[in-house]
Image 1 (cartoon, one colour):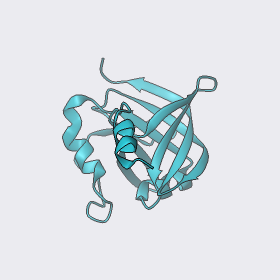
Image 2: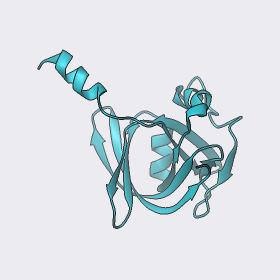
Image 3: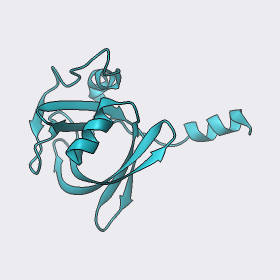
Image 4: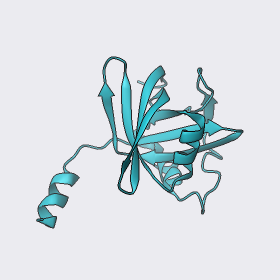
Length: 144
């Protein structure tokens, strides 16, 4: 395989900055995610790649729901905090303003552009990540 060509093409994919958050059993957790896509119009579904070893993946499996937050340009500090490993930063959402999502109460990032509350539909192994398919059950816009 031409590794240079592979890297050039993969780096040309457009990425937005997202955060996946989840709450279960009194614990709230989150992570940054940039491998996100809409997977279906009807019913509305999204797919997101979550690192297999992340605390977030375990909580999504247990909770059976998650929130996908679309971050705005000024949230690089929050994104950086959420990108750290759970071992070094066990309480990633501490100091980040959240509010409960309407359906299951998972943490919505209050300063995000918008968010989608999702019901876990399926997971699919994808190398060092797991593809998580979620049906959108609620949505909110925080900022234009």
